[in-house]
Image (cartoon, rainbow, N blue to C red):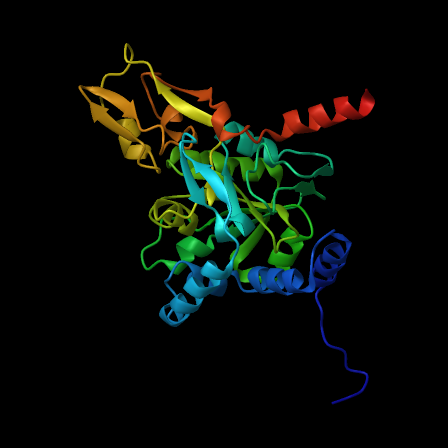
Length: 319
């Protein structure tokens, strides 16, 4: 091999490493973890959701590692039941209604909002640091891609900002396409129309911050399935659904659309399971009678509304 021959390293990889070295508390292990996760997402997620051929062999190892991780108590649902967060503290999503998800892809300035503990109730990965937020890539959903009969379309995962968008695009060219913010909004609206839920995802290995909006269905999404099995990978939007029984006709459409199985019919009216409801707003958008609405649920944390957070930060700085 020629001494002049150099190992090809993508510019996005260099940018990811540089950003990792500048991130406080980000370790070499986190950097390696982040590279593996972003470089081979289909292998990583396929193993995680149990659809990859080697998943059974790794299941026992995963159980051992989970027990070794420190457990922290948090509240589930309406705050009445304590649960262990464990591994979910390192990789989790925040449920965001359509309007809030739209704000996240319309940010036109760099943003640095650390330690959002009132919004992201986890010990780790709770920052919003957006660099070039108009750099958005649509990625074929790894969860859907891992399933034998996935929901369609596949290209509904939105990677937002740098260095993430370029890294995913350069390493997954056959599974990605660049979007304008308006094109990203169209994907969000189309997924909402299909009844799918928007989640803003955070991960410790992804520089400890927000990096993607996933549009999720209960049948394919690994995080939603983990949530049902008792691993609290998803934080409530900060809202909860209410029913106006004077307007509700008991048609059952909301029950059909609810991805969290929080709606049912009782005595001819829709009824909300307040523990299961995550305040995604999908049912509200599909109720033709206007009988459903979202209301704030303070016990579940504050909503992730990026424009309000930016405005609040700017007001605090200018005081």
